[in-house]
Image (cartoon, rainbow, N blue to C red):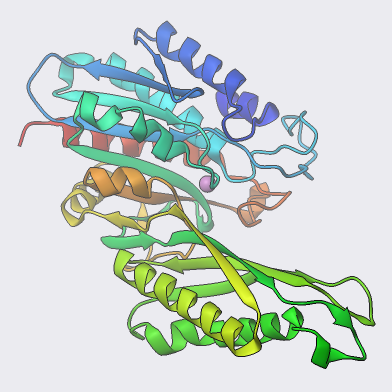
Amino acid sequence: VNLRRALHRAPELSFQEHGTAARVEGWLAEHGLRPERVAGTGVVALLDSGRPGRTVLLRADMDALPIQEANAHDYASVVPGVMHACGHDGHTAILCHVARALVELRDTLQGRVLFVFQPAEEGVGGALSMLEAGLVERFRPDCAVGLHLWSELPTGELAITDGPFMASADQFEVVISGRGGHGAMPHQARDPIVAAAEMVLALQTVVSRTVDPEQPAVLTIGHISAGSAFNVIPDGARLGGTVRTYSKAVKSTIQHTLARVVQGVASAHGVTAELHYEEITLPVVNDPVICALAREAAARVGAFRFAPPGYRTMAAEDFSYFLDRVPGVFFFVGAGNPEVGAAWPHHHPRFEIDERALTHGCELLVEIARSAAAPE
Ligand code: NI
């Protein structure tokens, strides 16, 4: 709780986690590990039991969000406009204490545990930058485990779901170029606003008409802009949005259909359209064998309740890039409790967690790491 509150007070944005990384390095060194920097503000440390077994990668994310905190407690953010509004302060504190506990338990440990403190989870490539630094090639982890404190589940509840668990997130932008003109003489212009409007509606059919109804998918237009005067047809328009799915195949179908619809509508209106499409994360897909191991570990730790089988969310997580390379599990630890103010959604200026969930996260990761690192 103390460590989480200290981190909460001093949040840092993606790839700027200098103070947080220094604190984590100090903590790990103080507890007998040899931390190393990876990808700027990322920190890793290896605990080797010296006994045969597997290598388990445990990951926590460290970054905060560009949000002005609206909570008034005495550990509220002191950095204007920056807030730990997703619980990553808790994840970092949990993994620090897991490292401390596993060092203390070294004599009973088998295999190796790699602690990964990742920068920049919030949509800007922190996981990929750590993987590109060669983590997998160098440490050859056999499995990867991560958790998220989750305020939508009550404290004491866990969601450990086989297969797809969180969605992929892509982002796209369409830049439409027409020909501007007088609002009274549309025949002399190529109106990009009408083209944009039709594009927004036509894109609503991408999911409903090209994706298997058994496969969840979302295509949302999140911004649109054009023009500045009531009697002027502008030269151009822009719109953009996000695509979410649970499978790489569905994601690729949507990407291709989106391009076809955008070009088709543009051509029908005599305007041109440029599509910029960018992958932010892959879907989080859990390995059923490691999920079973995690549920057994949870049952040994204590009296947790499990969320209904198949619990998933369309939110995204870049831990998906670890799971794309290494089998593993990403799971939710319930941290919602209105009695302590933990009743707000993630990314809300009043976001809060029930700090009892910190203990749950520590106990679970220690137990999962011990059993996953044991030889087969
Ligand atoms: Ni998060």
